[in-house]
Amino acid sequence: MLNNLQKDILKLKEEKNAIILAHNYQIGDIQEIADFIGDSLELCIKASQITDSDLIVFCGVDFMAETAAILNPDKKIILPEREAECPMAHMLPAEEIKKARARYPEAAVVLYVNTLAEAKAEADILCTSSNAVAVVESLTEDQILFGPDMNLASYVSRQVDKEIIPIPEEGHCYVHKMFHTGDIYFMKEKYPDAVLLVHPECDVELQDEADEVLSTGGMISYVAHSDCQTFIIGTEIDMVTRLRRENPDKTILPLLSEAICENMKLHTLEKIKNSLLNEEYPVTVDKDIADKSRKAVERMLEVS
Ligand code: 13P
Ligand code: SF4
Image (cartoon, rainbow, N blue to C red; front, side, top):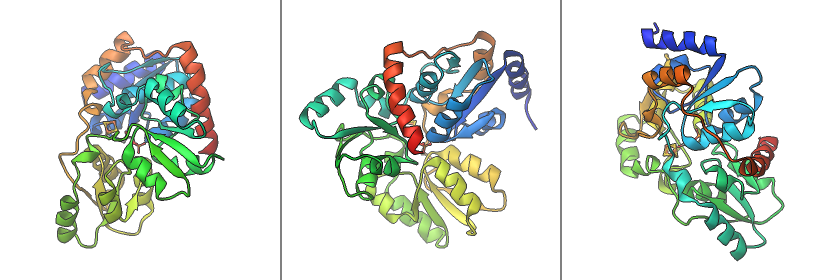
């Protein structure tokens, strides 16, 4: 049953001919009113296909809304809370990429979509956690500058026969850094038959203990298609919310209940209503930067 605020939002959405896109880490109340929920790649693909909406309300963090703006230069993209930033995306300034390129002139630059538009404009190609290996394998270069997540860089370097150089050296996500192997031993002792899924932003020691290392979208399809009954989820807590709603017959357990992305949680139903009423807060990307970074986004979409 939807609450009054959710009903107001759906009505306003119709009136404004708007579409609401939400990342898997949004709270359940927002997931319920979203037109589309997904991981970074699914949201990119969805954003590249929007033709019939005038307004895109993006319930995610800054780099995701910017990517939607890059792919839709003629549409209005709004973030319900303008401070919703991904700290990891701010760890790799464009200047640092230029310096790394000068040091490694033969290398290709592969950037995680968790980067700001200025950084994306310096990339040869982007990737997300669901296609990073395929993206790197699609390149002819054997040396790859990869940033900003050092854990995703390690994950990729163990799957491909190329030299992966992380930029910056220690880029990371504070949410996925909260997990420790002790959390795994505790949960595995309690639930020995459970399948452990972790995100590649988790430290390598956790990746090594997991049954599968998957993007959030990968976790959704893995659980939906698995014959197993119990799953331990090593990523942000609201993935558990979505998985439980979509798999009521399965047992979905968080690896750590405290793994909350406070930045994603800045969006609320009240702010979404305000964003539709006042068309706040617009996300814009400078035209030159958008044109340059669009090439790297589109190149990734071709590989995906
Ligand atoms: P996904 O693309 O797997 O959803 O990851 C995005 C993200 O920010 C994870 O922290
Ligand atoms: Fe950024 Fe981490 Fe939040 Fe993902 S979970 S949006 S990487 S801070």
